[in-house]
Length: 554
Image 1 (cartoon, rainbow, N blue to C red):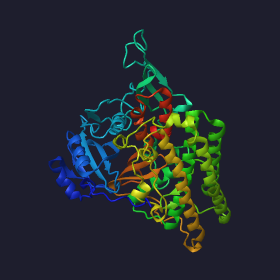
Image 2: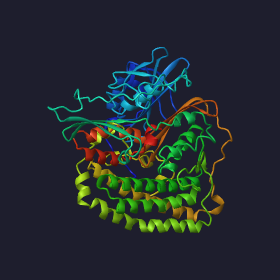
Image 3: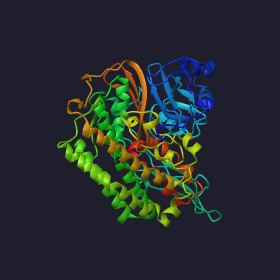
Image 4: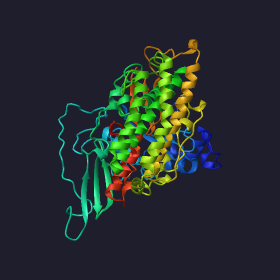
């Protein structure tokens, strides 16, 4: 079964000790700065590209998970969190301090394309500037915004003026003239096919897309800042439900729980891990059902059949989650060290209801294949459109079904095990088509794998001795992790790698809280998939990414 990865003989895939990595980097390393999850190396701000290229090409660190940045009393700092797609347990942090009075650092974008948006966000919110960046401008806030909201001297009371500048066509002086078919087209931000408040600035040459630029930030809700104002133990956990607010609540909660539990060295009881795993896979099914429903609506306008059928199955999952957590969307069910309460009583009724849903699911999936994947119109719209080659997907940091639909065999549930996943029998799903159709197939097949996981969890929970049903570890009322401890932890959410970076300062609140959204990185791939295609193909490609803007903008 695919829980065991194939052996690799590539030297770059071999695990190196921190000392060996330091020897490889040589004079590029200024000093060591070990984080809880990975060795950290401090480098000069003018050696970012050389350092990252060495780690990528010679040591195999080909996945830039996230770029986090922050301001200290005496410096600014950018941190590049690197992993390997072949083995994400091999991690390294590259720490880049920048001068307090002139915070300039070399851009990582020429090495990792995904650094484009991450560095723009760091510039926008914190004020670090990146040399050689191809398009260093604000990404979440308007260009006219004054100051950087996460900088230490930011004046929150300063009046702001947000203008609405006229859009300029990047190819022609006018939007259209008598000698050219070039035209500028706005798609969104208020359109159902944009899956939230997303603005696509699209340039057409005739009927073909020459360029498309996702314009985000309309929904920015300061989730990271609010988490930094909350206590680890009690006040942060309600926020994750609201990132991917549609259906990934427990998956989001797990991302924060995993980071905070590792930071505070909290060991979760085995029984609670099984409950977490079951609930997380219910959320994955609910998320994929919505992705299927909206994708069919985007591509062939199928509201009456596919959309309503998929929403009906999603509602059945939501019923189970409501029984388990007491809530339908904003669950707030996980606690650091476990879950808030045990399974609903009578347990037999909950197990029976869950098994009834699992029993009818194969027939539903077969019906979706008849309605969708066997539909000739749907096939014409999705096969060989929205092409995303595997190496391009990796370069952009794409994860989840978007990457696995391009044949990238990467799933944190197997590759960086947590919860109870490594004790269960299930398969990682990949497709090699690299197109819109493949990404849908991955999600539909993953629904079946999630059902297998849930069924095994139910079997375990049914037979669990009553006296050993421990739902929470003994966690102190107030958590104060060590001063200046740093950690990055991630889980496999429905849309990909959802990670949390935390830096502690010895208090009961994080000094820095950074969310690595899978939607944020996945959305960057849209121009690669859309350029050269037609407008309907752009809509199909966007739908195949399955983004939620609440998680993109955070």
